[in-house]
Image (cartoon, rainbow, N blue to C red; front, side, top):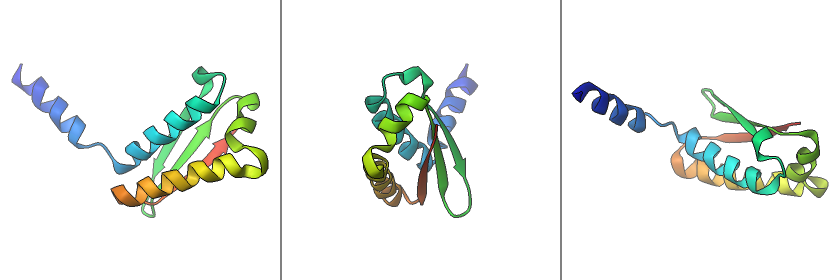
Amino acid sequence: MGTNDGSLAETVEQELPSDRVADLVEYIVCGLVDDEESVSLDVTDGDGGALIEVSCSEEDAGRVIGRKGRTIKAIRTLARALGQRVGTAVEVEVVG
């Protein structure tokens, strides 16, 4: 019984900084799209930082990118700001 409690605590402590940024990006993107079920994030951690790839339906990709790329630029700005606070570099890409 005691080992399960210890394992759970270790799992919570091992959360990567990029996971916090990915949670923020997912929250923002899900608020923008019609089909939240089609949204998925692929987080790749590397030496230079993290790459967050947002996958969504074709119709919703336009909403996430926005006119002239303004929406995705704002999402990237927020993600980078949080990334600096938690100590990691972050890039966000949309995969339609």
